[in-house]
Length: 250
Image (cartoon, rainbow, N blue to C red; front, side, top):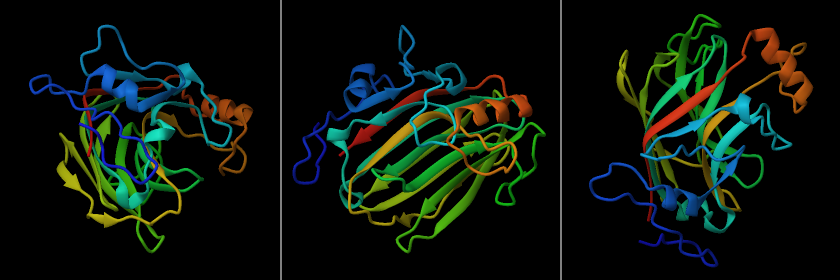
């Protein structure tokens, strides 16, 4: 099934799995997404992808940490109002205490992030736990509304190696994120009209491991400072696994 798109945007593969498989096929995902940091597909592929930012060490040149992600190919990106997509997976982050990673996001073709889902064991009053380095990871979503303001929603907590359900829907300019954890059950954000953008947007998911300048605690694009920060924090490994991965358009 081809996706409906804006003028000048080619029809994309439908990226639908077979009726009984429960996940989107490798061929359909590979037709829609490109990898940053190498292929996350194991062989054989049965709906599970494995990402490791610290193994891949992919540097986009304008990020705030190493990446290992799949992102929508440029020819299939659409404007906010035209985007109709549904992503779901069972997500298992295996991370050291004190780590923070973005596991899914919608991004404008500039530097604007419109929807972000992240897992963090860092101090943040927006989280349910909100403590730094205690091994309890908050799962949060941040959505940028039509007014340009970001709203953060706490969606549960997990420990390293625990799995949570993730469901993201982006339909006709509005987005919603739902998460299900063993500790807190099902929690979802409000359905939010997303800030319109003059260009196209794209979806990406995987392991985008966040770093800071060790001295200032601010954002930095320096790989040397990322390495110093990870060493200081004892973050020597990272993996985010997505199973029963489904991505649908149209």
